[in-house]
Length: 84
Image (tube, rainbow, N blue to C red; front, side, top):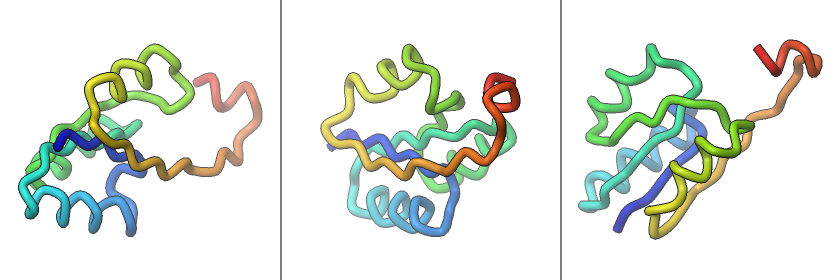
């Protein structure tokens, strides 16, 4: 099964990714940080680097998935900080 996970390497998403990969699933993990790529790949998952507020990126990340797990992080910044 192809599964896309948000939440990057957080406490829940990391464990979920490890379990899904160990059960033979093809997992893609969304992260907004390029520096997380190696750690995501080390889990046996594909790193998808982008922002959850980027509609085109999310559409492409989700379109071939059989299932999606979403862990939406809070946004504590101002609108201008979020756009950066």
